[in-house]
Image 1 (spheres, rainbow, N blue to C red):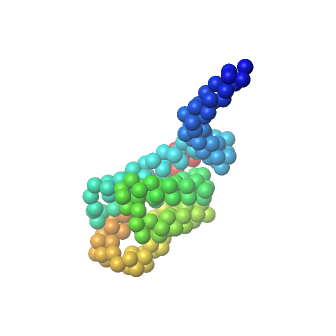
Image 2: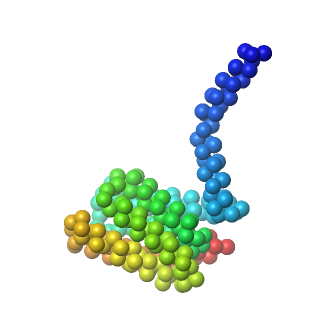
Image 3: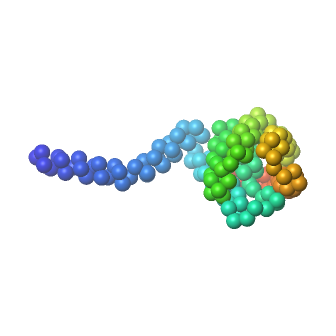
Length: 189
C-alpha cells in the first residue's frame, strides 16, 4: 500500500512539473477575467492587441529606419477607451516591453516610453467619451511631448528623431481617423 502511494505521489509530482506552464496560463487567464469581468472577449482582444502591437515594432530587429511604423499607441488608446485604464496600461506596457525585447532595443529610451505609454493609457480612459480620432492624435502628440526632452537628454540625432516622430504622428493620424473608429466599434460591441 505504501509503495503504491509513493508511485502516485511521484506520478503527481511529474504531472505537476509537466503542466506547470498550463497552470500559470490558467491563473493569468483567471486574473484577466477578474479584472475584465465575466466576458472572455476583452481578454482575447487585449491579448491580440498585445501580440499585434509587439510584432509591429519587430522590423527594428532587422534595420534601423528613420520612418516609424508601429501600432502600440493605436491599440493602447483603443483598448483603454473600450475596456478602461488597466487594460490600456497592460496593452501599452506589455507591447512596448515585448516589442523592444524582440527587436533588441532595450535601452535608456525604454523607461521613458513605458512611462509615456502609461500616461497615454490613463488619459485615454479619462477622456473615453471624446471622439476617438481627435483623442488618439492628441495622445500621440502628448506621448512625444513627454519623451522629447529625453531624446535631447540622451543626445540622439535631432534630424533623425524629427523624421522618426513626424512619420509616426502622420501614420497615427491616418490610423486614428480611418481605423480606430471601426476598431472601437468592433471591440466595444
